[in-house]
Length: 199
Ligand SMILES: Nc1nc2c(ncn2[C@@H]2O[C@H](COP(=O)(O)OP(=O)(O)OP(=O)(O)O)[C@@H](O)[C@H]2O)c(=O)[nH]1
Ligand SMILES: [Mg+2]
Image 1 (cartoon, protein in one colour):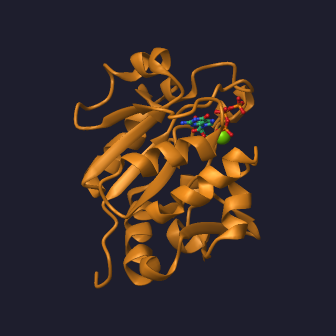
Image 2 (spheres, helix red, strand yellow):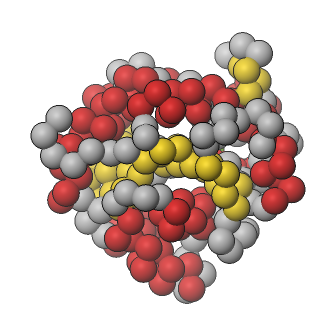
Image 3 (cartoon, helix red, strand yellow):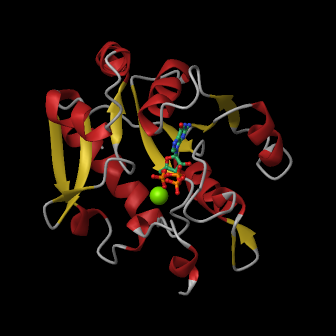
């Protein structure tokens, strides 16, 4: 790889899981909690891995199952949705950018992670966000965000604008075909409702 290296990854796990009616990161696939499965891949490919929860109570449910190398954080301002989690992640990474992934996509592949790193090395220096695009739909929770966006995010949140899409539309975002990052598209499978678990 020639350009900048992507060395930080953040798992967003502060959602309420209302539609699922369960703590989604703790749901199991092949006997392993979603978040643990996701974290193995991230630890293999990234120097630092963080996980952002909504509050201390929720964080406590995960503390014993995650590898001690993973930094556990709570939202700086809780209840703002994924954009709030992204802000907390960006405040705490030690590098210039991070890959963010949700804790309800347990099928994220190593190929996807490696390809995001390759794309970042190629175009990271000229993009605020690198976001997969699948059939015209963006995947903003499987995306790379630059630390330089903290001010933009604070401004949006202060105006009560919580859509990650609004951030992506207002900054220099670089879409990348999802199929090129993970030809199986399994990395983007998202478990939101009980019926999604029938796989
Ligand atoms: N840190 C943090 N993560 C969040 C927050 N809201 C959602 N997330 C995470 O963002 C990802 C996408 O969330 P969704 O699936 O859209 O929402 P959810 O809140 O988990 O589930 P619903 O309550 O059913 O909408 C999941 O990994 C969530 O854990 C938040 O306020 N803070
Ligand atoms: Mg979801």
